Length: 103
Image (cartoon, rainbow, N blue to C red; front, side, top):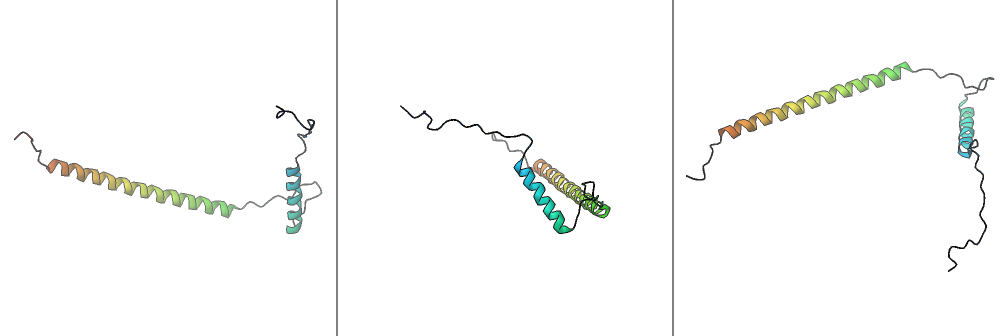
């Protein structure tokens, strides 16, 4: 009979849309790591610009093109084998003599 009756009053919990404790913790951890690595922010509050690694991009692009080329060749070989097997299967079916059950 009294199952749905609350024993304590309702509480109001204010959650600000501008304050995120996880984001604040992440920023604090990032700042500590940057200090340990020796990356210091300039007076403007921004970290120094990162150097663009063109060799890494080129190496990734070359590996991607190499892998896509090898997968294309593999696909061609598989298709050639399947077409050859289909051709041989049709030739084999043509060689079979049709059997007449009413002879």
